[in-house]
Image (cartoon, rainbow over all chains, first blue to last red; front, top):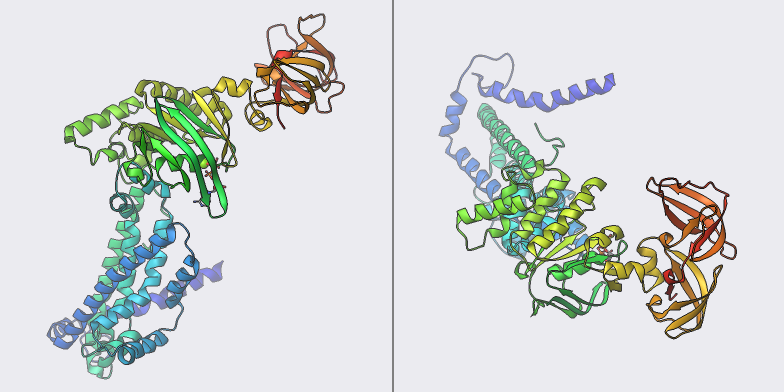
Length: 267
Length: 360
Ligand SMILES: Nc1ncnc2c1ncn2[C@@H]1O[C@H](COP(=O)(O)OP(=O)(O)OP(=O)(O)O)[C@@H](O)[C@H]1O
Ligand SMILES: [Mg+2]
């Protein structure tokens, strides 16, 4: 029992201590990342606003992450819905194949996509290629989350809406959609996060304009830039916490509306 | 007036033959029940009428219109689902008013209609409640109000009472009958509870293995079952072996343990030919004769084998010479009437008119 508790605490320390170091050095008035700290500054954040290349990379990443989140969630909704409908031949093997990217090494996905896009289709590399690739790796997560949401629903709910005169589409919109909304938000959020910090695929597939992780990786060659990276990381962590909190609040509201018992969540 | 007509309806799920040659006519204003054991196809039949399942062959006509290719949203039917399917994200009033979304009515008219529908099912003033804050019985009423507000020609109910406990169930049975008379809408009820079907229905179709075994009013079904299977399913029945000697307006039959009898032709609702036959006797048509009691009916000697006391009734299993299985009979516990002990020598009175001849 005692050992387990120590293990849990150690785990949390290893998980979160590096993250707490981010704001520490982001506001530290020194070029090098080392203790002791040498005073408070917002200099690195100011630098951030002056670094046009970094801003472009962040903008790129945000566009890619948002597009990926939307695409992967929409496709995930279609797949999860198909999975809840009546059995059709090949349904099981198809679902299995869709989930496969979950266990494929990313480097293999990246290399094979690069070959297909450039050699087979002869297309150039752009944000679109990254979005497509990120959608591919985010889909399994979206489907897993959305499958859960769809399968919790009583199929009679949709039939009841049909029975009361609604068309298939409006039954979906009026009954299914509001009830799976928490799942949709989770899916958006998860794919957004995965895409935002994905490195390998973005590294292989980005064209002239790198994503944020790729740009940061490039910065590491210049130690003097490290505190700027720390400032960047601080903003990202704050953003993630805000997003997670919103998602969790939405999830609880959804559960309450659906009249379901809360069975754990993030916060 | 015939409101619903099914002819030659067949339905397969893969290799499984779920509905077999269903022929059915249901009258306007009738309370019709589909009764049968689990898996016999009751829900499937109800869902084909609602339009959730399409039929393989055969036709369904509602109010004279062929329903082929007509979706559930366009049929003049509404359904109360077994799970009630109350929309959990909507209030009670929003649930009940859901079907009025497309109706050509003003907001006030809709509000009034919802209020009236809730009033009708005894939930007046509950409109503002969250749907998931309701008890099972209340959810059932919301489902009813939601379906009835559209004034369908037919209301389909799939085991609407099975999720309720016994007391509320019996109360709801009475309320449903009253409601049906009040609104005059045709009800089709699916149930596997034979008592519920007998209590509530104008007519009952007993289903086995996807086919209709017998379709009659409750009394005929109970008194004149056409087959051993139906007789077994509805109420309690003793079965004896017999041998038909001659048929005609009177049927001559030798009954195991009871001897030679002659019964009226109507007591053999399924056609009976000379030869071996199964004979049914209801427990309540047999009675024990107490010490010194005499009867104008026939009697046979018996020994009490088992006694089950129910309060208002006592069920006895008695052994009669020449019958291997004990006969079950029921006696009202009238004042001054003793409950006999196991092993008591007694006599059983019986009547030729209460025998039912059943095909095997
Ligand atoms: N969508 C389906 N796909 C395959 N088989 C089905 C489907 N729906 C029903 N069946 C089968 O058809 C048969 C009849 O089912 P149905 O639900 O109509 O029975 P029921 O009489 O309503 O039984 P219960 O009293 O248990 O509700 C069952 O054997 C069931 O397994
Ligand atoms: Mg059923």
